[in-house]
Length: 228
Image (cartoon, rainbow, N blue to C red):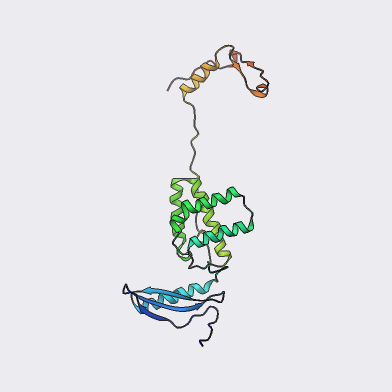
């Protein structure tokens, strides 16, 4: 019977050629939850494959997986589902906010991050994604950034990742808004309509009881703006 591996250690490294001609190096690694899992890496040569595998094992020792089987090798889609379930367990957000998070995940985030593992989602990828969204819609970029920030914060909190790729993302700047304004023709048309003597206005606190107010023509400015 093979001796049990200590937590955070790996067994003998085995190599084999794949159907594509590349070399695959693999070994058993005992994770922090006590489960031994197969970890593998491929490269052009055996030496390169073993080097890539050992680098992968080194990264794996930096942190321990959270609840269940989630780790840095899990996909972002797995983290998204895990995060939504965690929100439901805490029961601290309303249904509208929950639906907004789910919509932004399904429509904007998952089409881009679905098949990426957590270790593959870096600061550069997140930065380019958020900036691209920002050029289309400030509101969508802001909400999507919040979704990514919260989900990756959970991954760090549950020790799936040593740090969040969202930590280095700069602040979004809201584009300037140009207020809508009436044209001179529209202003003159309103003044002409208001200038009609004896015009009845039903407004204000007495509108509901049917009291009308007669607006004298001298209340209004008689100066017209030049047409544009």
